[in-house]
Length: 236
Image (cartoon, rainbow, N blue to C red; front, side):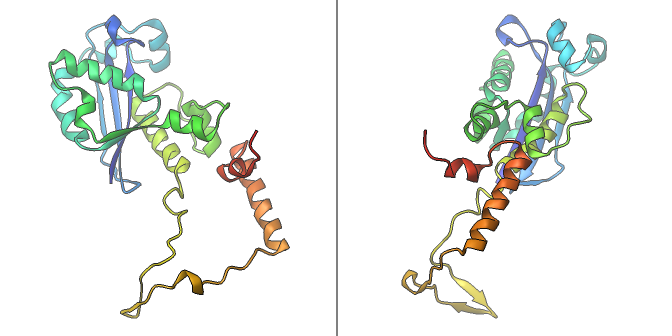
């Protein structure tokens, strides 16, 4: 499965007020592995950044003046993201700007070129209700180093988000148990084990205590409740 972790920087917060994209950073994942096939471009927005936005990303008009316009990079972007599942933190913001840029060029929306969207902010709020779920907060929670992040940058933030996403979803695809599974040993196909022949043994007191200690360690590592502890908590 091909996934693209994407982030943008902009001249302001509202494309309807004439604000434009000035940087796009993308990190490619294939079957949850970083490939190194990244996409990064600075864009001349042909306007000034608002003061608040400039304080966030630090990309000055002088720096962007000789960079390509959006119409000059759009075909490369379309080819890169085609059909991929796109992972974004606070997806409505970035998608709003990208769709706006595509419409200015009378192209189908950015959203029509991709295979779906995962919003990590929505996912984080589900996992950690009532807690701060900014990218910086998630980096701290999942032990992703962002000490080199002085200003926001699209590629840097996409790289951090890729690490956060992989940490947030680690083990998600390995928790299920198939009762019947074909096993090959020495070239011979073994028959599936019937459910009735499986012996279930309850955990001993020592094993339960070790399990509780492991959960406590996970809670300490994430500075809150890990998924297991939260799922075992009594309903309010």
